[in-house]
Image 1 (cartoon, rainbow over the protein chains, first blue to last red):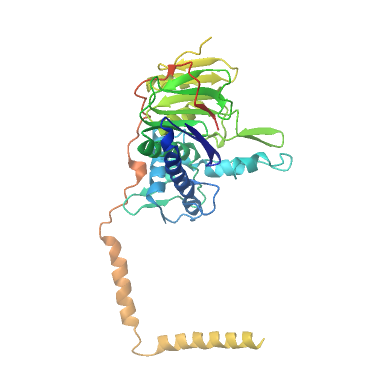
Image 2: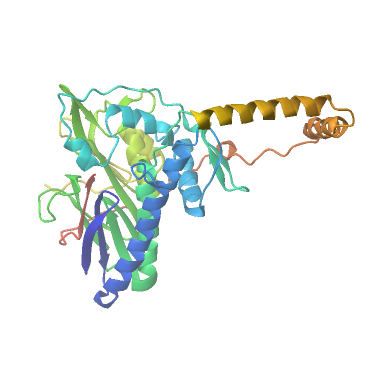
Length: 302
Length: 82
């Protein structure tokens, strides 16, 4: 059974094999996503993250959930060599991604002028586990978009599986699987845009567990005058990434790990080697449309 | 205007009262000084720095238990950019 609804500014999908547990699974997932939104949203003025960003350099006491999300974000930064960095918040905001994407997309490009900001770096973030506090220097703004959505996916899938035996949860195209999978695995279509139709052309893969994430600059684009921008900021430049890749899909042990790897790969010219050396199955589509698969990802069928 | 004048007068009275209190013999100047000494001596004790997460080691993204396989089954979701 499949249930779809709006959450975290995108589409959430829950798939379970046991239709009788569909309602309980949805309730469990909605609780998780609501908690993540209240803790981690950059666009809600009442979120915990918004308080941290407005604290003017003072330590802020945070909930266990935001502390976990911050740990995940900093682990992602370390494991990616800083390519996935939670301190891109100001760079994203000044480049135009300062509200939910529906608002950004509706903005008049003729009157909006993007500016670009240096990314201060994840090392500026201080977490104190004992006191449950986080401190960022005055002027540093955190954005957990790269990892919090994937964390939400992993947590939501676990919550759904706890009441439904086995579940797949997708949030905006990121996928997490928990519990029992159907024989042959969960079938997933790979596309540039997660809103593409289920029955469209292109590769389909089956997953038995873990997570899958796809990064692409074909979606979430906006304009500043005549300049086209997108949401994947390169922390090394503070600007939307100039990538040889159009779309990168990665399978990993969790949705968080898949998301970190797909986001980091997007910024690397030698992404296939980076992924292969880590044993992460992936499919990469270059800007010209040619495709590379690594680490056991199946070749596209003819 | 009357309210402002009264407020200004009140502020002046408070200021002069403070100055007068400091000049009075037997005021608690000694106690204040002792408190300051205690405060300045506090940092001499070894402080335990908070456990900053940025000092921890890196974790590598974990591969899946098995790679995706090709399938012709109808997909249940689409993985794509968001």
